Length: 306
Ligand code: FAD
Image 1 (cartoon, helix red, strand yellow):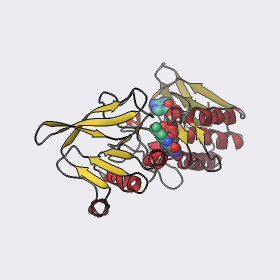
Image 2: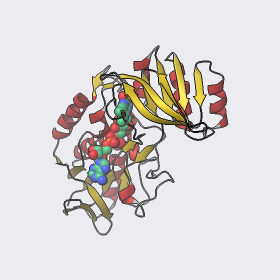
Image 3: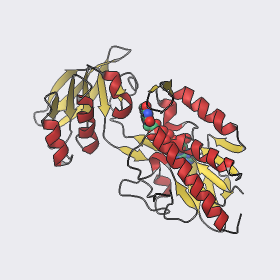
Image 4: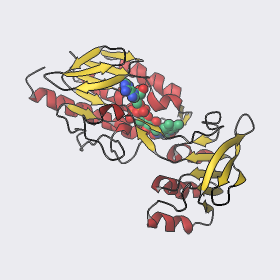
């Protein structure tokens, strides 16, 4: 059996693996797709000490760093169930069972998508999901934010400081963001808010986004807005459905961890975007991966099983 089995091969999982291996622990990584969200990212400019890089490059560096250590990477393997006992047993989609004395869950999250024509075509070419990451790419341009919840209105306020103009499109007939955020957004003269707006299509010129179409649900009329960027802020879905009923989660499905990365199940730790961490970023995921590993080490040296 492994001493530390990590589920997820994004920045959190890679960091957890390196920290575990450096403690001399038998370490394995199960990843559906090594690299995680970073593999899909174009420009990364906020990974401190690396001024600018690209997702696939950072993934290659992560993999090379992990492979510098004695870590068994099991790529293209999806975890389906976790069972506790003398040893934890992780059941994979392939039918295989992998055993370990401790487990670190680092299965990340995925952005909720609009599922409208054009969204996939222009993903990374004007359709964006992370204002902290991609906001500066739209400096001086016109953008839309889809979603009027806290993350949507926060994104609008953040972007309004950088871009020329922000249009917020909310499906409902009112915003769901906190009052204080709504007041702040209303005080900024380059934010326009449109409620009862159902985005129907992302429009582009073949290489980049040029606008979007929406239906005004009150009048059922069709509208077009010209812009360069669309920030989709309709939620982040943690990849933790497979642990429902096993490990405590928030009402949004995030795994609840304490400051040591411990979950509700002794010997199981979690890190990165799959947890209830306040912010979801590469550098934060890596830090929490290190935390989870050091806590797993602490746990293992206090138990007599390994
Ligand atoms: P992830 O990167 O999501 O990795 C999860 C891993 O778990 C993957 O290997 C996945 O295949 C695996 N997995 C999931 N479910 C299972 C399962 N059941 N069994 C086995 N494996 C499983 N952050 C920044 O700091 N800067 C940026 O510029 C930036 N830009 C971004 C741009 C885009 C388009 C996106 C989507 C995100 C961006 N982010 C950025 C956010 C950043 O990518 C995430 O915060 C970070 O990747 C989270 O790391 P993680 O390891 O927790 O999860």
